Length: 382
Image (cartoon, rainbow, N blue to C red; front, side, top):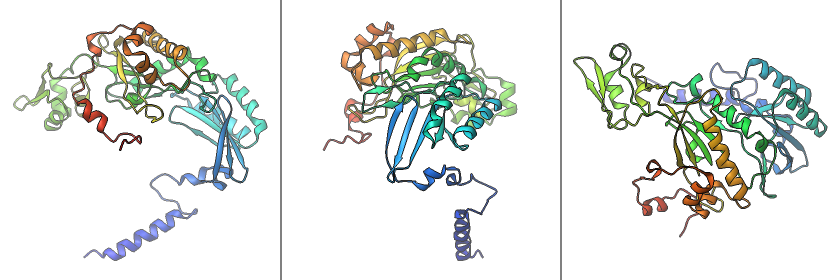
């Protein structure tokens, strides 16, 4: 019989040891506090304010007057060990070895000596890494954020487009907006290489989404060798897959298929890559902020652009046109969705030079009353 009290005591003892600095486990990550810079560990939870010294440089001040500086540099997602070693060398040289990576593929160097800021920036620029991506909301000055994006052709198994290649091509073209705070409001860019939306592109101001336009090909031999039929059938959200038990394979109802790739996730015998028909859609208007306007999900404004590696000029041109049109006409603090709704979507398409087609009509089935009554925001109306 299991002694539950003993089990509970053993677990409590384990947790107590886990909290000790000299205890190491063979599973799970080490405690994050072990890697904090001393000034952050000393003032943890006691920060008074922060300020932007210049684009890409933040100053954080504690209640007791201690200060630490963050220098933010952009990087591509694909980093060689040589580049990482160079980052580590810079961290050892200027900030006692302390750095961190952000979710937007930036590297931040945490500096306690203010005199090290400019030499670090000079070294980063000499290596080809721009410093920027911050904003000063009080002054109404904003820089373009680095892009959040998914895996793409390098790692993911269902992409319709690349990720790192497109991101580099786009950010190379928008370089100046990352290094200088000259945008009227926040602008988040994102990329998801397929409709599974791993890059959270539905919540970004301008988004790129990989689009499959043809159904998966059923490799009967591959299905028999690698796939479980019930799991494969159940993976389809539109019930477009039907099992053929006698042949030990499946068939796809093309009229129901929405080309999401879920079936390929479960069954490698159903690939859906199509170099001729895969491409990207462009979405705009997503945001999570509650300021001035409720949170919104992005809308499709370009239904399809073909893949054009290695520089994707079609995607780059559309993203740049949307960004610069908004930046030239928006009011201070006015996000892209706020600007589009103020001038009207007809004017949005006219000013950006994008073509409106029937593919862009919003056919979301939830009624307006249901949509506006959801408690999805802190701006409650009583």
